[in-house]
Amino acid sequence: MIILSMFDLSFIMHLFQKEFILKLLLLALLYSIIPLSETFLLLHLGGLFGNYLILALAATTGLIGLFIAFSEVSSIIGSIKIKLKEGVYPGKEFISLAGVLTGALLLLTPGFITDTLGLLLFIPFFRNGVGKFITSKMENSLKEIYEYLKLYELE
Image (cartoon, rainbow, N blue to C red; front, side, top):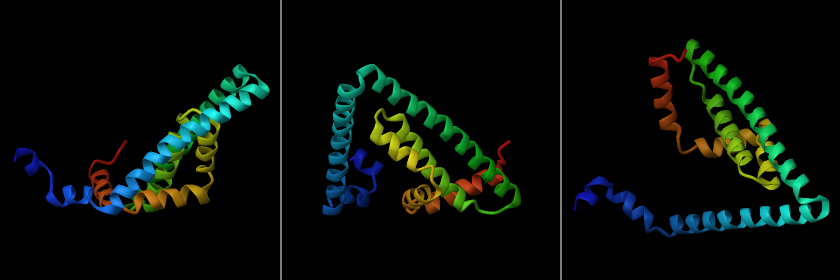
């Protein structure tokens, strides 16, 4: 009974809806297909060019991408600070930040497929598309974050 009081009943009922289960299964399928395809690609390229070269190249692309991600995130945070000082809601910046952080997460994942997808998210068209998809369900939370940041203006 204590556990049920911790969770909202609608949340528990949501877990048993057909749409939620289908999304969960698709996510599990992606979770298994992407590492398998990355492993296959690394083995195939390792056979063609040498294992050490391919591993070094995969690590290098990830590191370079993370440096790019760090500079992009710093730039976006700077824009958010400017918007906060002006008293303007930084909606576009939140969208860009979500896209860049998703790209950085993909760059942290070892492999060429995820590195390519992560680097694509530094192109504004793709970044904004993914950012809008991610932030579409979080609009109220982002507005709360904006109000919090306005109160405690970040240095």
